[in-house]
Length: 356
Image (cartoon, rainbow, N blue to C red):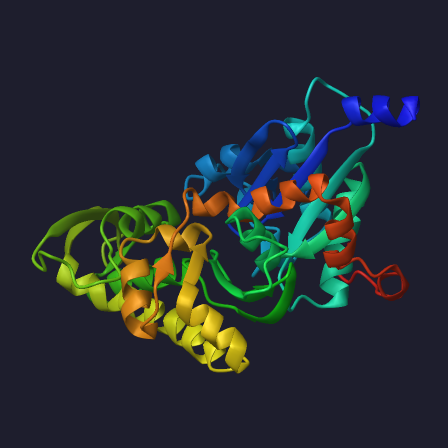
């Protein structure tokens, strides 16, 4: 017992939310300690990683010669095993407390419809990153716990987590998922759509950073108060190749974001029609909870509220709901054991096709 107590004092308990856009790590007793883009900068000369996270993001669109910035995760799953492993190792080292080299325990989130092969790849990446014991649980369940859904409540709660590349819908009853759905649509589609619109209609090529700034500071899910409001956008002129700038209006770009938000809202509405009557009655009373980075899009809660005709709640710091829900599992080991998706007998027979 003395050894066990000592180990608890020196071991880092990590909650890891590895998303397509960002990796967020929280440590038991310290809350969120790392929130960085899930990016690496790679040398094309020797294929070695030269920068991670924020440093890599700062290079994006302004890379030096023979350097490319890539995302090792795609649509919430591992696309490049080796680079995911190195990125996770770097982030874990950065998040650890006190320089401890003691084996760590971690809980990671995965999409509800992830395949066994994709799950095995993520599990292997975590293990090879030096984490001794790794548990995996569904993202929707973690987001629900992080949004203060009570795992002992017999009445159903609905949580919609809108990420960069995916939207995950989970209905929770007594700490278990009774219904779930994942769709490969997220807030990054808005960036892609605005980039395409400006390129095709205004003849200007813009970068990822500029597209993100437009979405964050100018675009809205609901009809703008001032349709004539303008924003100056800078980039490269497609005809001359020279630096240039164009003006966009709120009325011009509103249909772009509305189209994508409508698709997300339709997925939510369709999912709610699949629920059992008693569950539907609970959701009617409680509405839905929006989490994830997409929940911060201006007006999205109002749009979805009007589209599905139910109340919509956005908790404080919705981006951190998933990682904080994972973090709570260290205080609920019995619950973690029950909800964990680790299936060793199946996973051991799954190959990882991503490894070089």
